[in-house]
Length: 136
Image: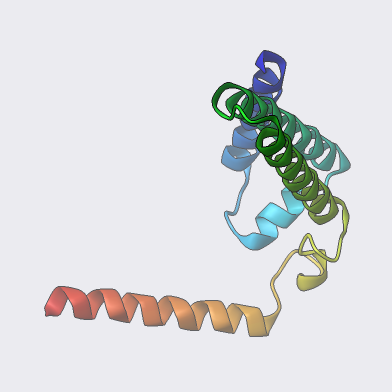
């Protein structure tokens, strides 16, 4: 678990550097960060390290606290299947351009007008709700 913790800590540092050096904090900015192949690779490695880290921890919990072998084996199998599913889905999101948001942005990383209108309308609605809650 120490190696996976180091991998996740290194990825966190990389992500923080990318986050604080970004010029815009928007969906298009996140898409641009994860458009780089090295960032996708780093995220995939961190995701796999996270899943392995979780597996080792959960395996130890099941082994320490669940004594009947059949229940422990069932829980370990379900945990392993769940983590494999999460890892597979995460890698699919990272490497599939349709799911990463690339199809939602136009040239130059600008969100489509309909999406911008929806976001600005929801922001106006939220600010109106906040103002009205302060007044009452």
